[in-house]
Image (cartoon, rainbow, N blue to C red):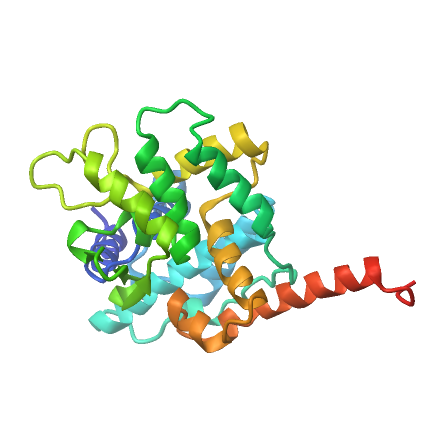
Length: 299
């Protein structure tokens, strides 16, 4: 195994120890494997990390553009390489993170699509009415109620353990990015759905996870995404709905109802208020649309 390949393995292991989400680790693993393949073209041995200079990194970045990859994909691959080199700096194996000098492609400023309160409630009510025959209806309803009612990331939902729940007081301890913990209230409907699921939950021996797959093991984020997509397409005819849509809806609907922006920041587990402020932009966009449609002087 080359020195660079060993460095990749150490970095991915470090991400796992730091509680990075399985989704991030899986993507970074694929991106770094492709980086190794690029440096191994023609059967060559990849250079040692200290031998990877700015010119070689720029050639690799140019190759990504030549493949006509989306800018968001290139940004993620660049983040994976920067993370690897930053890890090597911390290990003392290189002196400078040269990947930081690469220019990050800029993304167009777009706001996420957010389902309305009516659309969200209609979908969840349809799941509660069991309009779609499924083997674990209690789990599926609890999954939607918690995603929307608590504004969780999909990795946070799948990482929940029974020991994290306080069903008497209606709170859940959430483990966010980089092991940051926060307490999130569980609204009444979500709590009722969760309790029904817990009554029917049948884990395999020693499994602490709240949400389980058909084998009684922890539900993966991929499995949870599949469940959400299935219901969204079958009941709402919306293939664009994803777990983060419900997180956006949670924040946007709270803000529209008058919730304080800093309180929403705490509930979402955002490190920076600027990340939360995009929901203000969403609400303003909605207000302008209503104004344009309703005000007699708007046109």
